Image (cartoon, rainbow, N blue to C red; front, side):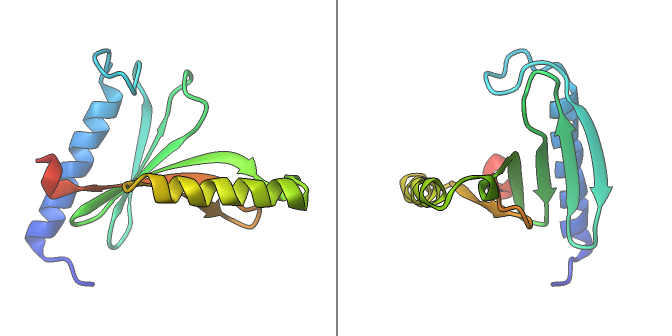
Length: 127
């Protein structure tokens, strides 16, 4: 997928907005309290924003592409540590959550099958 100049400019602008929002002391936000330590890395097709806050138990990663930002929260909870019966209950619950919420998805990540929560944002709808 090729990015044209305007898409790249838009992606950079969104990355800067999200970074500023996380770094500012977002006291008015019900979801985010206090300032976050933010790092930004650029890949070929997207930017990666990594945010950490000592009051929030998980690291937040946001992938910003041309038209979509995906917020990923890796819980660090490995499903490999559970016995098979408990693991199946967890997988079933995750599938039900995926059916119940249209914009939020749960999944597994990495070799240890860690639980991850993903939210996609259409950047045009945020403008």
